[in-house]
Length: 373
Image (cartoon, rainbow, N blue to C red; front, side, top):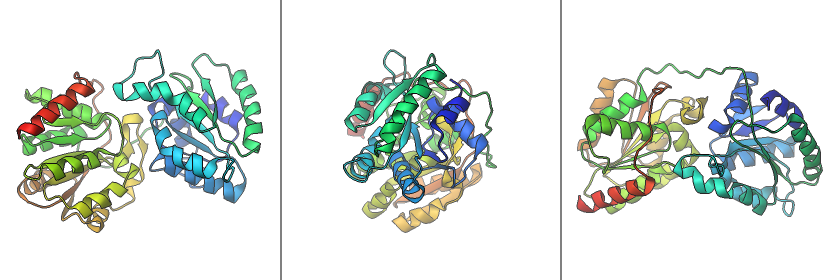
């Protein structure tokens, strides 16, 4: 169904969420109509953040908000849904719009398969009634369901629309750009060249796909790379766990701005732990590019200042390859906890592939490599 019809049916005035490729039509519509407007549309750090923000909106206005997200974010909403929204607690109604990755019967990436199986059940367990919108769902069906949902909402219960592949459509265009010049894939090439045989933990999305292809291009093995294909926001914590237990080995983490924002508290833990062998690199393109390009707030905050405050010993921000190579060489040589922000343009190759090894093969090869070094 057309996203304009969906918006009209749910009749909400405030939207907050974390972008999802399955919800690209909705995301592009919201950016075209509102942009980032605190009164109507906020892109939050993570799905729990969205849910609490929506609760605040309801408390202040008495109006029902909308929270949109990929189904992988259901884990992040469980606590605020169960202990804040639930009608046994405060009874705060929210309309959730959930992109259904890993929908049974539709091919998807490995990190989405199990989540796809339990998507509906998790909502049921949280006492959230749901309805699936597929590419064949009629507008009239959604209108009828929303009329029934209004009774739940009036009782302080939340509801959810699960959006299957092709469930929403939008003819409008949204163009996401920034003023940075370095390409992320080229940035990763420079990191690979200087890190050598050191282990790399890379974040969810296109960064890991590009790291895999850079290794192929170089005729290198993938054994020293852990590709975090799911679990957005947790790559730096994985890297910390590796670095602590491999104290004599330099460990590199290639992170993204959206992932860093999603669980920024991990930076405080890393800084407090202060491993002198960890290099944490955030490639900041100010966007959730892997799911469409919607902006993050990373263009408006001081990531290096945050890293310093968290206890990182060596920090730098670079926006050109000459400076990048210089700080990478310094990071390689120094025995301090390092944080490097790299300003990146938005964009990736249209023919960017995906890893040809399975997640379990990646884990096995990476662990075997760690044991040997």
